[in-house]
Picture (spheres, rainbow, N blue to C red):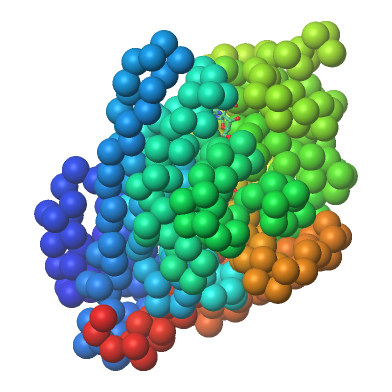
Length: 447
Ligand code: NDP
């Protein structure tokens, strides 16, 4: 419940304006609840007019994406790019290709991205985009034709210093390659208009690993600061074994954790003595089902559907698949199973009721805005390498990533202490990112 009358009115207006956008309203509501706790400390905030502007994206682009399938039939999808906020830098955020993509999901993701990017300490504004197109089951040729059609429209709105997209769910190195290639052909310039590119044409080492590795570095900071412990020896479960999940699992295992269970869209694999995370990574990089792991170890148990994962006893849970995958029932299962830390690899994977339940039960909770910011941080480093035309080694990028994650944790931990909400990182991640954007928007006048 939002207590401040002005903020309550703001939310009510936003809810009327965006009635069919539940995910966007969920993100706005959580954000305003955090602002509610600090509004008395920031007397100029309400007069500044920053908040109503922040609840409206700067630009929403929706476009038709026609393409021809392998059978010669014309298919039509809907493409999106939300250029949410450019107060601290050019729009930056991934592209998602998935049948679930709609305006609400695009707006919630770009809203969240705006605060996340502010937390990295890099000059990155917030954006997000994608299409209601799922690459699963499509041939390479179909995916290439789709990506080319998508870029034949989007190219006019993006570019270095303007808007620099990257990957997200359903958009990996293959899709970025097709989109970058077509963009370069149309604009006739080789420039860093995308991140997540292949190493041979301007990509950064450690970009594919960055979100998952960053999640582990952030979790190590939490465990260290609040429990004087580390990931070593902890039982970890990971949902989703895509770019984020499989790299988080590999890194957690390298840091000494026992990754006992992982899932994909099909189901869950479980072994109480720990899974071979590098093998799961290899299977999923080949875009195969996690069930292919089972023949390698007969002692592994397999369950379906994937939501069974949350019933498995663990110390640390990394939700790395999709939004709202941990609901109240799953949160209760996690607490029953002895979880100590939940750290979000995916964007908004935990429902508000589940977050409240976990925090009320003294579970350490790492919100996505902070915990999964490693990906966009290394995207920022890729932009720097592209501008300077000087690539860094894997270790150089990884060291910078570690430092960025450490600094994000330090900043939000300080904000939590400053506003007397120790260990409430949901609140402090929202407020730390917001204060930076607020200062920039207030300084730049009403634009
Ligand atoms: P991928 O497409 O690479 O992987 C997604 C994974 O989740 C796949 O393994 C997929 O299964 C699985 N999955 C999908 N739905 C479910 C479900 N209901 N239950 C269990 N598993 C499921 O995406 P990413 O790893 O890139 O992104 C995952 C999340 O992380 C998204 O929320 C994204 O926004 C967020 N994120 C990603 C960043 C990045 O750098 N890539 C940066 C920050 C956030 P299958 O393989 O069978 O399809």
